Image 1: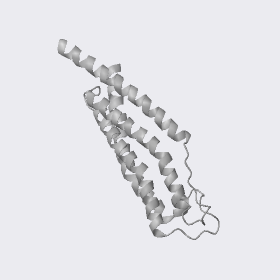
Image 2: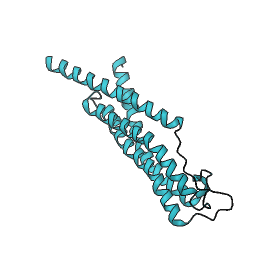
Image 3: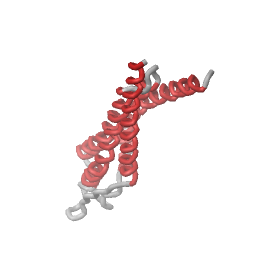
Image 4: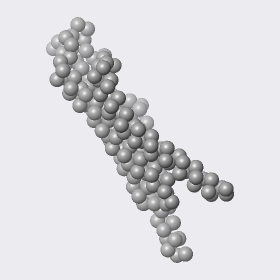
Length: 178
């Protein structure tokens, strides 16, 4: 097998596995979150509830789950586009406008996740401290290095997708000339 065929085979193999992993995560993320929320709600606690505060009512716990579903929904939407990119990479035409578009959409959802994280955290801090006595409720707005890293990764993926789009246009021009 020549080096080009070896690279294409490797790309197809990795891309097929990447697509399968995306689909597995699309199922595992919401199922796992609901399972953790239902079985062990204190795992999701961030420490904003005061000592001796009454237990969190079911309604607030359901709101907490709804807030936690926002980043999960963004992740699922992004993974859908990443799986599509992997499927295109596994095809005979991995360098195409479609692959770069799927990668750009995935990057867009990464930016959305990074932007939603501080808002989600603030909402969770309010919900968790809701049963605290007046004056001890918390609104905690934080920006983590994880969110900053997601945003930087998204910028890198945007740049790669734009380069891929340019390369696809050049490849199409060459194909038309020949």
